[in-house]
Length: 405
Image (cartoon, rainbow, N blue to C red; front, top):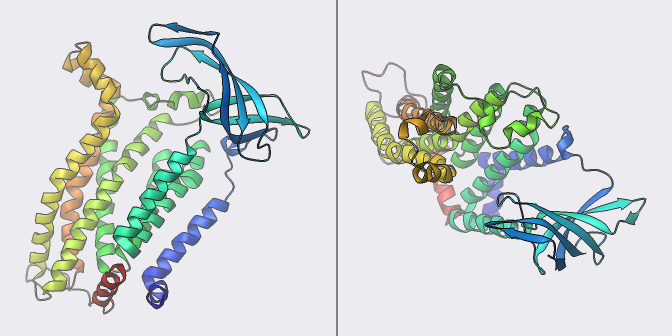
């Protein structure tokens, strides 16, 4: 307990508490767009399918069409125990249709008028919140068990990022603000906070942040120089075009597309920058007499080793989301030239190469920043004088190691 209180009173502890406070404030902020305003006569609850009437369902090859009448028992909320009926209309689409069976847990939307529950309701989909919650708890527990105090800070950064996207980024987009500047502002602030949470109040955090800023600039430069040449429209993303017909005709879908490309690679960029900065910190910690150019060279070697896998990671991540499309191309014998010119493929090419370009530049930038900022022996070729060593840095590393043990 004493060790925990000591950590909370440290600079890292204050940063963590401040981040938790930010999460609380963001959750209390009202979402000003209408998508977060439930109708007063609707109540959402968990339900259990009791019986189904499938007499009007018809099988046509791989799909079903018709309607399914459900009897659902409400299992949560103020109307728990009540039974309602719902109609599930199938449109012949495997992507959109759901076929329910007795015993299925479902999301039920109840209609309440003047305090009276209607006997008919709607069932949009299966109830997946329980499984999602179990998976989230397993993820949180694994972070805390294997990483201790650092894992807790990583969990805080994870929640802070998700809440910031929901409460700041998305409402700003729907309000009509320029997507790319909004993404740069939000992601830059989150990058600084996340690196501060994970790396602590130490020199390596500053080194990693400066390197990540260079990576941000590289991605924006690639988008600015080559994005227009791809002749892409933001409606290429699934569900993007539907926003224009849902009361938001002013949205810059192409700008949102570019912003998503920028955001997509920032996780890998932060990872690479922190890897290099942490390696340089450990090197200086064990070899305080090392020269500053040696610090740079060591950072470059680490960066080259990590860069090779990171760029492939981006390729795996982005191509995986479009694996069915690639299968369609192969199954139908679409020529490679046609496929590469299709906008669905071109956007992933831009996504992958823009992120990879940011990774390529963040490695040397972080290595050079580490050589300038870490306290090493000054080399004749290095003009800037070394910054004075921070006395709390090395003891803090040891304290964190003891806390995590």
